[in-house]
Length: 118
Image (cartoon, rainbow, N blue to C red; front, side, top):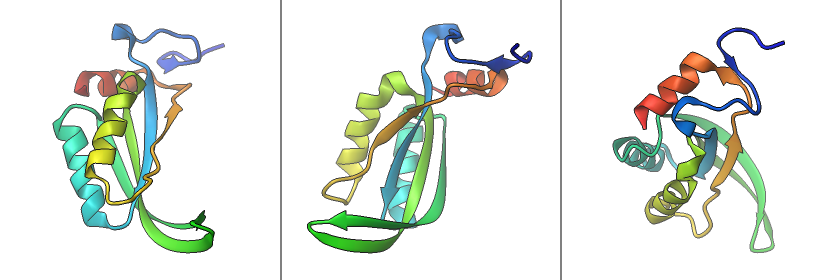
């Protein structure tokens, strides 16, 4: 049973957006602010949260440990190709992380707000 005001898998949102989160990491806060501002200004995202993280990964055969900034981009996944292209244009990394996750459940009011911002 679904609680009133909640969106669950298979439900259709007004206007047919596909709410989701796109993730990317950057090397510094200034780069994150620049990318976030561009995506918001261009109506590609409704809200972007930036927070510091520590990443351990393999790059060119070496194990790396880096302090980075994670961008949590709330958006309509129907715009993923545009978002990915814009991030790649603005990003300093040779191979930036750009991955999308669907929002399978959420507050109807919040998901409607996301739609209204785009």
